[in-house]
Image 1 (cartoon, rainbow, N blue to C red):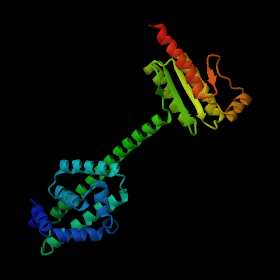
Image 2 (tube, rainbow, N blue to C red):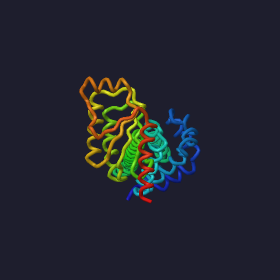
Image 3 (cartoon, one colour):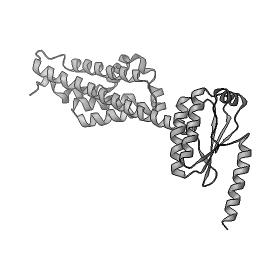
Image 4 (cartoon, rainbow, N blue to C red):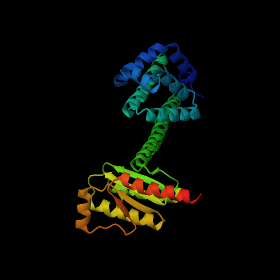
Length: 283
């Protein structure tokens, strides 16, 4: 059994009785964090000081499961609000140092210390802090990775916006830079959407693209061929002169089933007219 010197209840009571001194000492230890306390509370709704008391309580009382869940909650909160990890690490290490300083102060009157009891107590305290940090960083990284993946998927979807204008006709307007990564995303999404939506005509508007390198042009032609294999006819609109000249010089050609128009409006006028005729013929 632990010597009275190391009874956890006494340490907890001592910290509770000297709560303000404990907080002052903690803020003194965490020099870089203390000036950001209010900002972190306002920006992330994270009360660092109260959370420090909670962490100390879980460690002293040996509540490992509560400690793990608290670390998970903190990790997700810091990841979701994009708070700096260096602040968290400095804050937790400041908690460790302050806790040990108060343990020493609480027991300074003791004349004899049982080393076995001391090492057991030291193991519980430091293992608790390390377990919190480990669980915090794992959950921070896991949530951050999921958040980045979700944001990347959103960007990918926005970069390849397939817009239905009828049950069988869709428009894919491309704007900005088209690189290899974007054409890979385009290939995956176009083929998926053709199968899912049963698209028969895909109008690919390139009027927002000023330049494409050779590899991108080649990939684009393969996407058109793949769409054709799935029963979808591709209509190209808005090709700029610079892109056309490059295609001519490199010997690139669209397939005979691929239509081209100077503008998106021209393509819409034709294909919407065909669609209206099809609808009338069914009545």
